[in-house]
Image (tube, rainbow, N blue to C red; front, side, top):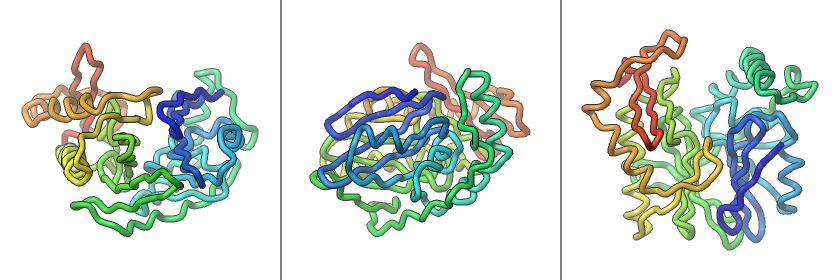
Length: 272
């Protein structure tokens, strides 16, 4: 079952039965769905209950919890750097892992979950530049959305920025619990540098401070000041002294935590 939160006019944040979020952005002429969740339910049918406008699907990155729902759509787009990730994460091995997770949560899966074929997404073609971050603008009709390539969580991670709302959609490039330890993740310092430069460049270009953030693993809007404070907290000293944690994989994962905020940064020490 999907849960929705209308966070701004034309912006609906949606959580699926597995607890991951996606966002519907609706203009006067068309709409964008940013991510599609685990695909445990017919995302397209649900979106059609929210809007009758044409919907384009943009994928923030290639991880399974954001892309498996794309099965319900004929077309989608992803940054080309994450196409290999998409192929791997829609594979049978990954779907078996998701099946076990769903069973543990008591979430039913479609009968064809293991056998359905996935159409490969088209590539997002960036045609504008802002600093070092490639970007393009999607005009939905009285609502414009900047699509920006920000490598970090994965090489092809993208974020969305809506200047008129002072709203940044970070995908998995930032959550209060941020993971930069996957094999394809960038070194943690480069991720942090990219995020800090992104914020600076957007605020410089727009002439205003970013005020709001939507994350992929949080059901509600957050203040941008939290994102800025998170990045400032994860400084070089804390990266150097972060304790190791066992994630059950042959990667030297280390963790920084801050309470009571509940902030967590997991990263690969060998890349740091």
